Length: 390
Image 1: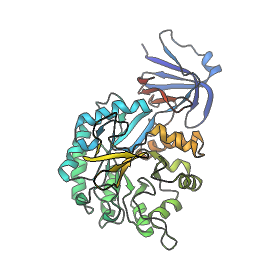
Image 2 (image 1 turned 120 degrees about the vertical axis):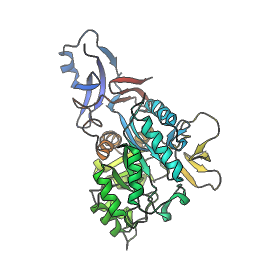
Image 3 (image 1 turned 60 degrees about the horizontal axis):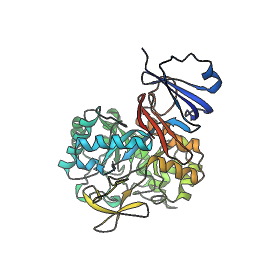
Image 4 (image 1 turned 90 degrees about the horizontal axis):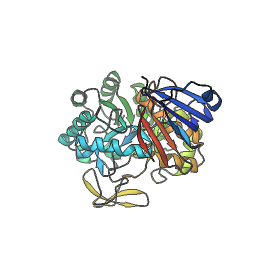
């Protein structure tokens, strides 16, 4: 017998249209139908169907975070399978149904151990699904290292990249690289053949380097504006290339600290909305309830919404959640429907999973988030299973 769930009385954003008072019908883990109230009342719903009243709250596809290092005290740099799985468990309470655990640039043994821990975790998740791993380096610029380990940076090395892909067993979905590095074109062409999305980040690329990178398949960018060559009137740089060319998509960290809200509004006016991807870039101590806070095995402290390294007061990273990012975007004047697109359909498209996730249409996985007017998650469903209920 079919396993069915109906969510009714919801303000639905399907990713294509809006249904003010609608219902979603889930059958065997997939979206069976998305309808308005009148059509729903005419449907023949089996008596054993679980019906959930959304209470007029907003319902959309589950959030997809393509750039997240850790959560609730767990982090990819722990290099433990358990940490990846605990992140999965906790993220659903903030509306996340899919994520890419993001691995810092770090010493080679730890880097590969982290990759292997992520590979082992995939398929065992009890909460949010792991779409694949995001490698943030090690082929990035020494001039734009941000909080990465400078001693672990490497020049573009095709042999080493092949080692990572073999170890990753098809689980590497995304990789941050600096397009200007020598031999990057050869490496980029290999990654494209392997189905790995390449993202320009931690880069000192000039405008010309960015064009060469785009021609080689580097068509996404990591935490736009941060850790990249800025815009200059005689050299558009990496920032200028991303603003000028609609083909390249970009991540944004919408915490109000990493990027000024006015610049996000500028980006929204100039970049096609389907090319903007909301990410958290959050660190392990995000939402941590107590104890010593560490990020990439260094002690950090929290101040004004971001984490700082205790040893030198350098910004270590974000404490953002996807839900808070959407709330901030709306507060800054971005329409809710577009903010939701940045957290759902857009990242799905970047990862190449948009035939299964990111939209609420029949046949897609039933990955769903429901939240109230205070941007508080009330229900999260992953593959048709209730993963979180307030």
